[in-house]
Image 1 (cartoon, rainbow, N blue to C red):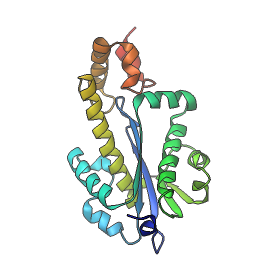
Image 2: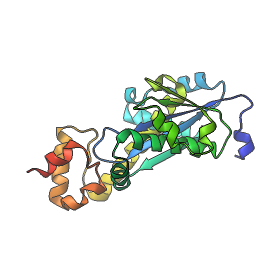
Image 3: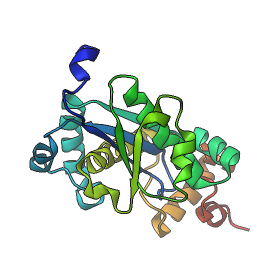
Image 4: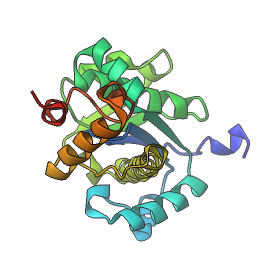
Length: 219
């Protein structure tokens, strides 16, 4: 598809959302999705809604359709890189803003768009300040429960599907199934990982600033 084919005759908009923020194991994934004009009803027919309300398998199925049919961008921050960035920013919302801004910028490199919608988190200036020259010209809307916007909901599905895929392969690489979230099962898996692979490798699979780290390592 040539670039000129991606430029809409009427303005569409970009939506962004993330997955993995509350998961101890695995990456943080931020996705951007471009919703062309007059496509919101089509997205709803596909079953697009907040990914937290969709099963993992259905999320993967919808994501495959979205990836094939619409411009999008995925920013996947693996655990090691995540831990480096967290040390740099010392603020999760600033790290999230960096990822959302990169997703927006990556789509803007491929098409002309004047509006983006993100789920609201932290200080609204975080995302605005993280945008580069091209992104600073966009009309940025940050709203509570942003997944009510079809483009944001689509981005949430793309982000979740990518998170699930990377979590699966991460577990395969280390020979251990990594549970989602930050539950007692996650603490047990972290302790087992440390027993098998050593605490020095924990930062390669987990977000080590979580309280789970202390519980896994013990006194």
